[in-house]
Structures are given as structure tokens and as C-alpha cells.
Image (cartoon, rainbow, N blue to C red; front, side):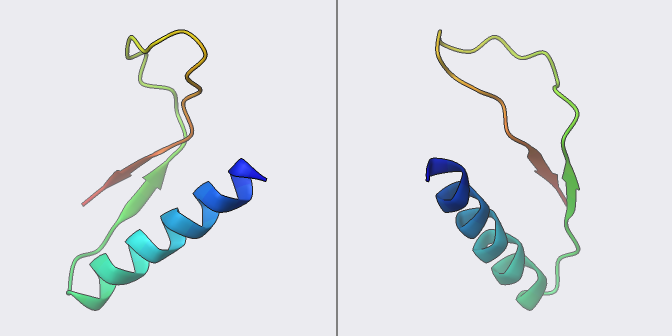
Length: 47
């Protein structure tokens, strides 16, 4: 269920950015950032 919620949030973020005239690009390559244990990398938006 959480992945669905993340997907919805990502869609809304991209939609607002594009409505504001910014082009966004979704990257799913893990950037290798250090995160807290139990944290899962999902994606990165670039603009």
C-alpha cells in the first residue's frame, strides 16, 4: 500500500512542477546515498 501512496505523491509532484512550466525527469538509478537502516530508495526527480 505504501508504494501506491508514493506513486500517487510522485505523480502529483510531477504534475505541479510541469503545470508551473518546469520539465521533470524521473530517475530510478540508486545514487548510493547513505540512508537510515530500513529506508528504501525509490526514485529521484530532476529538473
